[in-house]
Each structure stands twice: as structure tokens, then as C-alpha cells.
Length: 55
Image (cartoon, rainbow, N blue to C red; front, side, top):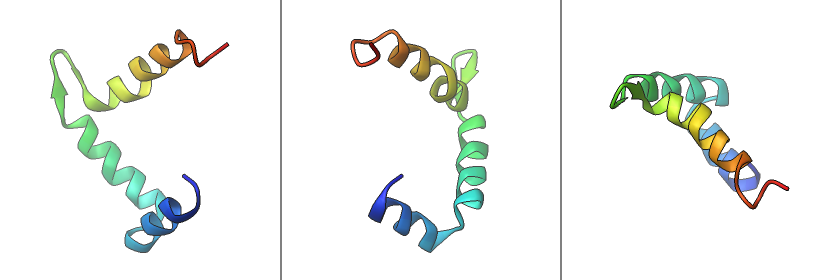
């Protein structure tokens, strides 16, 4: 995060706590035979690495 995004995040919770809260919620959100965290942490990364935006 940069600039104001980081500032607004830090106003509500320290970044470490905000990350832990988000990860816990994403792990609890099922999507088929996986969860939201796995999709964001692996499938999104794989898609980006195979895209035109990654030379």
C-alpha cells in the first residue's frame, strides 16, 4: 500500500492486526473445495505471472 491507503489502514488497526483479521476471514470463506485466501495467495499470483503484465 502507498500513501493514503496505508494511512487509512493504520488509523483503524495496526497493519499486522488488519492483515491477521483479513486472513482469518478469507480462510473462513469457502469457494468450492478451497477458500478465498488460497485463491488470492496462489491462483491470483499464478494468473498474474502468466499474464502479459509479467514479461
